[in-house]
Image 1 (spheres, rainbow, N blue to C red):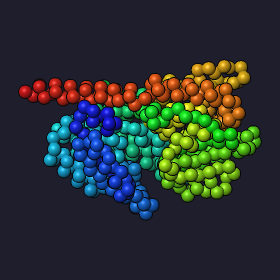
Image 2: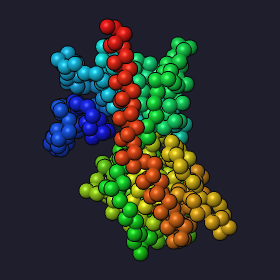
Image 3: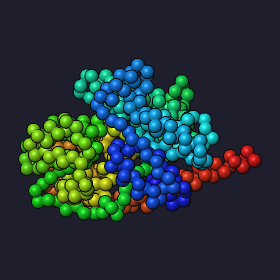
Image 4: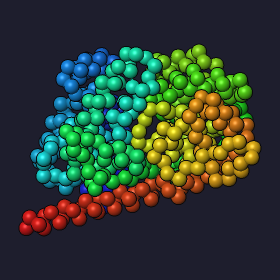
Length: 402
C-alpha cells in the first residue's frame, strides 16, 4: 500500500512497532515515505487483564482500549497541527481512536476485517464458557464502536464485498451508520514475484498451517484441527506430518507440538515459502474470521494445494472448489478444496496427499488465479484509482468554496 501511494503522493507514515528491532526495520520505509514516525505498542498479559477489567467498567471495546497509547495520540495531534494533509489513511479500526472527528482533513478508514464479526463468531464457536461470555459482551460493544467509526470516516475501504455489505447494514440509533456510496472494495494483493511458483512437495508427506500464532482465531483453528480432524486423518494417512508455522505461538499451541504425534511447532521463521513449497497440503480450517486470508493468497501463489472452510476462503473471488466424488469428476478447473465438517476436511487432506494429479491441478490453477486477479500490480492500480477519485472530490469541494 505504501509503495503504491508513494508512486503518486507524498506519504507520511506513523505506525506502531512492538520492539526496538521493529523500529530499526521500519527505517527502510524512508526510501519511499517522505517521513516515518514510530511509537512503541506495549503488550503483556498483565496489561491485557488490566485493560479488560477497565473496558468492562467503561464500556469501551477491549481490542480498542488495549491499543490506546498516549504517545501515539500525541503524535497524531502534533502531525495534524503542524502539517497540511489532504488525506489521513487510517489503517485498521484500532487506529480510528486517534483521529479526531470533524476535522478539515479527509479521512479514509481501511477496514481489513469487520472486527465485530470476528468476535461474534468466536462467541458462537468458543467451547470455554468464560471466553464465550467475554466475547459475547465484546462483540456488541465493538459493533457499536465500528459503526461510529465508519459513520465518521469520509471514505471506508474494505477487502471483500461481504465486508462492504456487513458495514453497509450496520445500524446505530435506527439509521445506517455507513452509506454504501462511500464504501469501496479493493482486495488484498499478493506479490507473485516474491511468492513465485515453487511447489515441490517432500517425498515424506507433509501438511502445513501458517499464521500469527497468538491471534485467537488461529489458535482456535489449529487446536480444533489437532483435536477433531487430525485423528481422522491419522486413520488413513498415519505418516502425514503437520507443521504449524508462525510468530509467537501460545502455550496451548506449543503443547500441541509436544503431545500430538506428527505435529511440529516451528514458531517464527525467516521465510515461510519453503514450508509452503514442500507441503502436500496447505490447511486453513478457520471457523472465525473476517476480511481475506492473506495466507491463502500466498500459498496459492507458491502453488501449494489449499484445503479450507467456507469462512476461511470468504471474500476470495474466482475460487472453484473440488467436486465430489473425485473419481467421477474431472475437476480440471478446481483451484481449492472447501470442506466444513471434520469428516469432509479430513477426506480432502488425505485425498490430496495421495492424489498427485488432483493436487497438481489445484496447484497450477491456484497460481493462475493469483497472477491474473490478485497480483499487486493489478491491485495497485485500483488503489491509485480510488485516491484519484478522492483527490477529484477534494478539488470539487475546494472549487465550490471559492
